[in-house]
Image (cartoon, rainbow, N blue to C red):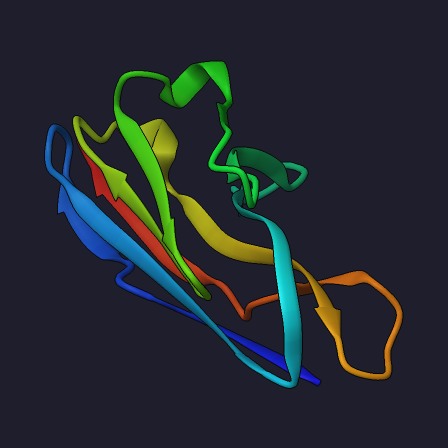
Length: 118
């Protein structure tokens, strides 16, 4: 199995910064795409940023120029700057991994709350 654990959420004022981190552990053979998703109250979960094993990144338009995704082996980070109240959400880490003896699939963390006050 794969365990995905996020950390780094919290309360910050508008214009502030936060760094989210995610660590994947378990019987992992290889990790493909990793990404951050978020879900605000009453809204569907949406992709925020993803990074492939080749290092290619993709961002949703709402965070371009403010958020930076990075990965180091089985760790994933999201540096968030110039935060806005509309960034308030539960942020989830998603990992596509090949696990020994199991089919290729994705795994989710439990989520970490980010609250941006105006």
